[in-house]
Structures are given as structure tokens and as C-alpha cells.
Image (tube, rainbow, N blue to C red; front, side):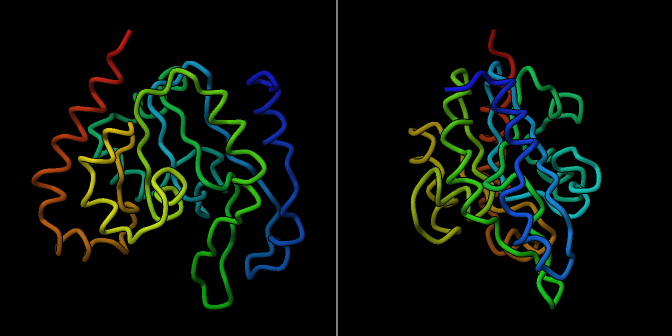
Length: 199
């Protein structure tokens, strides 16, 4: 098992998807966004960086990040505290857009190559926020997103808090499921705060 610094350097230098990204509508080059340290106790497991994160090199620097920070009750300063928070998506690079301008899914090769090593390098994690379908499948197994999120109480027994993706595209989903804001979010904020305040 490589040291965390070596692991981060390996991910940052990864170019496994160069040809895949060159063939997308965006024809971009890989830019892995790596955001973790072994001391983290909260793990935010997302999908993959979007175009804005690809440009900034910092996770969730977009409207989805604003919504996710609101959901968790974390300030930007807390959210980006590398000593306490790791942001480890299912793919470290922006996958690009298809010909219609839609987001491409995270390449499975990324998680197959790196995720096990990263999880092993985060021994102090006490709570995982699984954000979106790909992360939910990895941490909780297959199943519809709505079903996974609705089963949040059972998932918490495994140390995982299931969440839909905070994209604006899910605004209608949030309106159809008022229990998310009324019941899940208060518990999410309480659990996140408790983990953040651990010594």
C-alpha cells in the first residue's frame, strides 16, 4: 500500500483516460482533482468533476457544491478543510460531454484503478456521504436512487448517508419527495456536525 502522498501523486499523474477524453465532444485532457488526507473523518463520495471543477481544480466549485454545502450545513471553510474532509468521486477527472452536451458517466476504469487504494488510505473516516447513483452503487449496491435515499436510516447503520446528486436537474425530484428536506436533512446536518467535531 503506497503512502498517502505517493498515492495522491499517482492519481494526479494518471493519464489512463487520455484517449477516451480526446474522443469526447469536449476533447479535453485529463486533470485529476485529488482532495484527501489520511486524517479525514468525513468522506464525500461524489460522481465525477464537472466542467467548472475541471477548470478550478477544486471539488464542488459549482452550483451543485453550493447546494451540497447547504444540505450538510458546512461552511466553505469547513467543506474544504483537508484535515477533516475528503472529497473522493467515483472518477477523479471530468468525463466530458457527449455530442448532445450531456454529462458522460464516470469511467469505471478510474474507480477500478484507484478507489480501493484511496479507501484504504482513509482509516479515520466515520461517515460517508454517497452522492448520486454511481457512488450509491459503490457503497450500498445496486438499486434505484430514490429507493436508496429513502432507505437512509438503514444505510446509516453501515456508516453511509445516501444522497441524490445536488444538481439543479434534481430540483423536481426534491419537490416530489418533501421528506428529504423535512426528515433527512436535519439528521444529515446533525451527523455531519458530530463527525466534524470529533477529536
